[in-house]
Amino acid sequence: MIDAIDLTRELIRRPSVTPADAGAMDVVEQTLAGLGFACRRMRFGAIENLYARYGTARPNLCFAGHTDVVPVGDAGSWSKDAFAAEVVEGVLIGRGAVDMKSAIAAFAAAAANAIEAGRVKGSLSFLITGDEEGVATHGTKKVVEALQAEGEGIDHCIVGEPTSSETFGDMVKVGRRGSINVDIKVEGVQGHVAYPHRAANPVPVLLKLLTALQTKVLDEGYPEFQPSNLEITKIDVPNTATNVIPGVATARLNIRFNPNHTGASLAAWIAGEAENAVEGFKGFATVTPQISGEAFLTEPGPFTDVVAAAVRDAVGREPELSTTGGTSDARFIRALCPVVELGLVGTTMHQVDERAPVDEIRKLQAVYERLIARYFEAFA
Image (cartoon, rainbow, N blue to C red):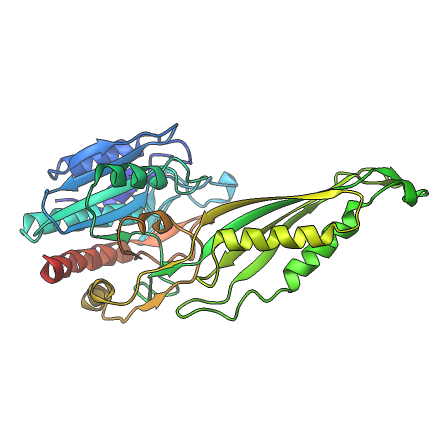
């Protein structure tokens, strides 16, 4: 048997700030191997990943999560050492307590109980990465590609991200908006401010382009999704002089988009607006997009019903099925199978004194136990 609190504390004590592993993956592997899981370490670049499976039959219910965490920030502002995993008045304090070492521990404990009770009428698996909080290029994305190439069958997946909004169990995520980052560089001709006819100032051109992008209403929303939004995150003109017209101006923006769009369609729109902005200008604009993920939705049906019923069983609450929030590794896993995210209240994730009540971690384990039981009753 596994104690979810003890395992969470053991994981927190491994300071696995991306891309460091600090032994966190060893802890997960040893825990699952002790339950009879066949464990495979899948290292890509500097990133440690793990795929572990109990059983060989279908259906295969997978739990996905990450052992890496964000930096501590100002360590002196923490009330306790960020990696000491101390419990104070029933609250576990530490980096990763919410996001999301507790969920890994809770599902491992739930899996142990399910195996002991003989409820696994197929397979359980874990897909754990050390690259969710970073650039996410050598983590879940690579593991999914490898599993697809091998023909590994995963039927449904639960991601342990902290999805609850205000009260534990009030929300699960059944989809996410897509995300695209775009760097824009406008290059003109540098010159003296007293002789503007000899220069080509890129700043007005960049402002014209950003205004056109910002004022565009992308959409009014999409079923189950909020409207897409474009946010300018950086503007820079590398000019320290007061009498020089700069030769370069740059900007960065991010769009969170619903299924009305694709990353490619938005990149093409921005490139077209850039062409319009530089028309007649003695210079040019360069648009460099990076698509972090496409929008997706796990449609309501038997799988989402199982997840919602598990929450009702354990905490007596009907969860909202939501697509709000940022991106997660679910955007990669959806290529394998339907995916839903379910975890703790996320209000303190990434903050100083990140923390989770011990009783909520145990409630999460209870939800996962009911989910496993209901899943194999419904799909086996």
